[in-house]
Amino acid sequence: MSVAGRAGLLAVLAVAGCTSPTGAPVNGFEVAEASIPDLRAALEDGRVTSAQLVDLYLARIEAYDRMGPALNTIIRLNPLARRQAEALDAERAAGTVRGPMHGIPVLMKDNYDMDWMPTTGSSLALAGLRPADNAFQVKRLLDAGAVILGKTNLHELAAGITTISSLGGQTRNPYDPARNPGGSSGGTGAAVAASFAAVAWGSDTCGSIRIPASVHNLFGLRPTKGLSSIDGILPLSHSQDTGGPLTRTVADLAIALDATVGRDPADPATGILDGRETPNFQAALDAAALDGARIGVLEAWVPEQGSAGSVTRVIRDALAEMEELGAAVVDVTIPDMDDLLSNTGLIDFEFKFDLMDYLAGVPDVPVSSLEEILESGLHHEALDGNFRRRNARDARESPELDETMERRRALTAAVVDLLDREGLDALAYPTMRQETALIGAAPTGATCFLSAHTGLPALTIPAGFTSNGLPVGLELLGRSLDDARLVAFASAYESAAPRRRAPLRTPPLVNGAAPPPVQLAIDPPSGDGVDAVMAVDLPTGTLSYRITISAENPADVYGTVLRRVTPDAPDEEDEDGGNPVVVLRIGGPEEADPTGTAALSPRLLGDLMNGHLELLIHTSRGSDHRSLAPRARP
Image 1 (cartoon, rainbow, N blue to C red):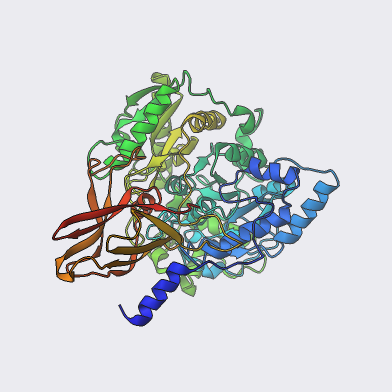
Image 2 (tube, rainbow, N blue to C red):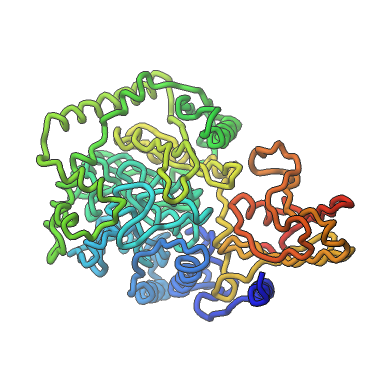
């Protein structure tokens, strides 16, 4: 390494961090991982104002959305957010509090209409689209007193599950920025996981709420079709589209759902609520809800072997914990499931025409059809084939569509029959049967269509992490309008076995900015001919090290490494059987002063912060090993 490079490295190791008055903690209150009840309590006792909460969240967005892990979740910030928050603070001071969402900052996927901001679907072709009014759920949130911070990136026009778009680019997963954040609500999921808002809204046409929930250690409900209005949501398929929140806790999910579900004359599907009482999700929360419940595990989707095995282990462990809470868990099979699921999707039939109808209702629209988007060339290449295939459909009605509708009815009947025949309260399976894919690789293992193609509700619950440090989501599917009961099951599981773990790459801010690198304590400390300085920068996941081995002739040095040692209570199953094993090379033969940096995988970053790694210097005389631990973990 050059002298200049070493000097730069030492500056990184010694950095004390930047300070900024904007976004600095207010009365010691921390918004990272704060729930809506936490925020509400802080607002009620005067520790913070809503305007200060806006500043705190905007500071986190500034620190981590374009810098650090560079998550790239936000399309646009709301220029009126602080003014709206100040007005709500004035209402609170005057004695008016609208409810639990009063003054709570939230984010919206950029396919929800707002009459003061563009709705773009993250497409450059729609960058100037200005809707005439607010989406139903946006109006409900504004009425409830929520503060909308801005809009999140999505897979362009919601037509995929990796969240890449011509207007927003590629969103990244805060647990591992080399991996995709799911989609199409990947910007929403990544933003909530990184605590850029208390809660954020997405949409789900096949799995676009549940997949981002799964890969971001969140809760996300695809509601019974018709429980939440899709009026004012840029459409992908009106028969399958739903909208709703992604949250870090079940209580937040219940509060957010209660604020936005309900009958809407502008959405005929919500007629399912006619003559019925709208579910009350907060009232349904019950720590004992799993006692006596009967859960059927779709055996075909939880294979013990192969590449899905690491996910299966997490799912089986979660189900075992549900059994300890009183649930009966049984393996079940839907006969001929693969055949029943085939050719049951409606997106290809409806997208072109639904988009055309939506655009026709927007004044001064920049384009009027999918065909014009294609002609403009203002769409991402990843969507080109998808859009052209769907644009080739020349009629809304067809015998093929009639056959698909019949197949959907058969699929729904088979699922309901299984629930009834086995006396089940829910079906269980992983939301994604594989770990989330690396950016650029095709994601595999989605199970989203079972709910999306039947209209039945499905809830993703954080189940734990694979040995690679990546989140796994357990999905529960129930009967029509059993949404609140699914949320009750999730509340019981969360109460007994919470699996939420904040991403290490987006730690709490220090004086309104990303924290300085965490210095590592080395035991035994420097001495015996070894001088070592090590630190880890959490936002970038980078280990910096400077090690001097003066006690040995360089020719006697074989190598310097990090080694994983057996943790006292590992969170995940160790693929190495718990035995010590080398995980990172720092220096090689005859290197007596290794100095440099290394990018850490999610597992290695977690191991380092949890004290599961040691520094080992191997020489001709044997091994010198020293434990590592963060001096002050955020």
